[in-house]
Length: 357
Image 1 (cartoon, one colour):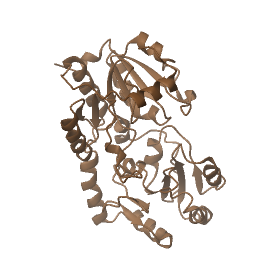
Image 2 (cartoon, helix red, strand yellow):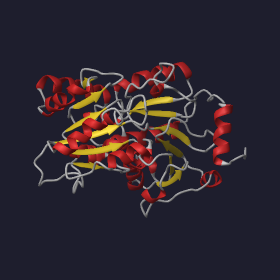
Image 3 (cartoon, helix red, strand yellow):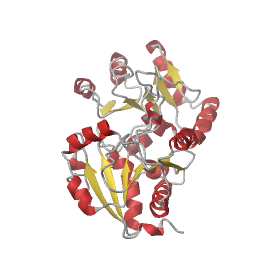
Image 4 (tube, rainbow, N blue to C red):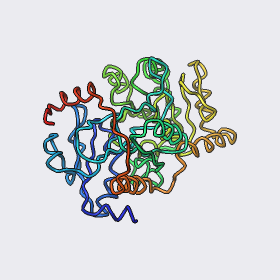
């Protein structure tokens, strides 16, 4: 059966709770609309900015409205979603596994919360752990599809606002996670300030949306002809514009490295051979200079890593996600019941102010 053709006249809900989710799901939206399906958005929580919606994008503003509309499939880039909302629930991830460990020493990327019917994984190093969990629990399926977010990534973005053809300097992109324990932003501030004054490189800075506002303001104050602070809901043009990234343990570094470009990390929690990881700030400049040379040995290690992380460079991951979701919807496999998750669902109902059963 042609599961892509089955998209026609079906309803798909985009369930988001962060601004970066717009860019994650829009390639998927384009595939659905091109095949005659219908798309609506549900913006959950106060951190999503409605101003990022395109004029043509329609929203549902309550759980009652979702029930009235009766979506066939629900896509979410979050770790958990309400199970009391109708539709086959598909997890598409909000980023790659960056190796972050919680306070118990566990990797939350592979924590199953009993919300999804299908996980669309990004590559072999994500598929294998989730397939093992699917075999253990039995209440969801796994399909390796690649990540829809990256579909536009594998073709040159026209009129990229972060490129400057009149500036011949190398471009350094600095990104950081918001966790105080892991973030390079407070630890490398003085060094980055010095770089902004030296003008050796063209510097772009972009932080996780949950970064403390006082740090954001500190870095905004550094802006000059050498350093630009960027706030955006779509990081793909930003990633394309840079030659090298400086990062910590943020998963955005994995998106960057898929371009086969070097990444320098500061105190990374999982420093593999594909990264240039340093723990001494005095070695930072040397590491960045080395990265700009793209040494052959490092580039070979990056290529090997990318084949495990996300081997797809055809820009068709959205099609694979859509086909896998339609297949699950139409085949209706005999999955085990999901865990009831009384506490989580109660908290979700309270947040959404929804008490119908």
